[in-house]
Length: 420
Length: 90
Image (cartoon, rainbow over all chains, first blue to last red; front, side):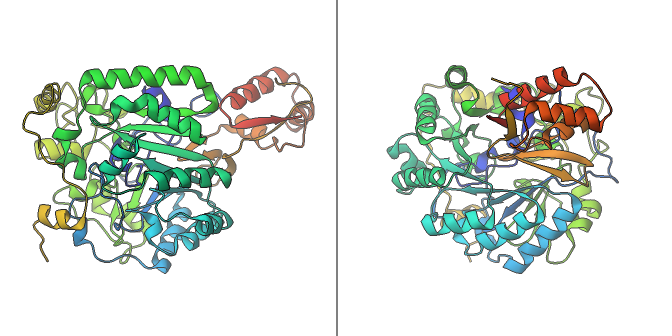
């Protein structure tokens, strides 16, 4: 399935529903192409002192969100972040990043439309030559705002759904948003935007893959992303409940392939593979500090939107440093560039230039050390941890049904031990 | 069907632009980017929806003092249409 990925820069779906795609979606170099007509991607890993441009810039304008999705990739301690950059700060970030070569812009959150200045930010981005992508749950998008965004030069809207059924959509997001999202989908098409429909897949909705694809077709989606949950943030806390069985994943792949065969190039379907089921890791973010730059709501710059969890890292802030110095010179962005940080089995592995050792966040979450090989890799001495999780997913159903933890401020404070 | 009179244009939702930092033309689309090599860039920038294939080929042959480019250009345009990078107008 990975043949679909290379032509896209895969930052994160960052709408409430798609947050979990995070890392896996940044797994393809943007310079890559799916055809003979273009250059092959750079094959050498970037040298620590000479990073290429941050081609992908993701602005997480806010952590505020009306939805409470159980698989959100946002940090579970998001409630600690109480400040947001001003409009002027965001505009400066855009100018500085564009000068470095950023060209794809994700406007995300939280729900970006919780901020009133999205159209101002999009307008400046458009003027600077960014291709602008709004990643939204659809909540807050009405006729007036969609018109203002069109006037501002917005190029594309990625709309999240949680399922093809109202019941599951509303349950998973802990909101009544299915009807509203359906209306927003029609609005997006009425205003002639290309539309990516994004649905995060997991144990509770993966069996609806066929219905989800049919829904996408009815809505006139140009692209569909079936993003299997990646286990970070809230999804990590809810992993037991979200992990599908292997048979479920295989059925979903079959259904997806059949759909592709039927619709051809009319609708592109990206199936983000659940990496636990693979035996090699995803080339996460194409290596940290390689092509991807996230600015979180309070101005903290991250080499991946999930990276805030990494221990011992001091992530710089755009309030105090220029984007250029952050990208080129900061210790945090240089920490995992190149391969000198690698341990065995990565260090001597012939595939290290292909997958960059996988995902640093996953290595940290599962093994306690972000410099370890991603435990998804069959060569990792920690692979048994992944296998154990897969095994649990094969049980008829989780016997002692753990409780789903919804993404909201109260749970965030509880998880992060911050009760202030 | 690609014909001499077809007028290729950049597909809806795609944008072609020159990126100085990459020293290349790129094709941008929802959450993705294709970095084009020199010849692909030269072809796509001529696909404005106003010029026919015959005119584009003639212009390329003139610009690069070359002959017999039709086969390669046609093949690339067909490839690009298949990927929706280009759409054909009549």
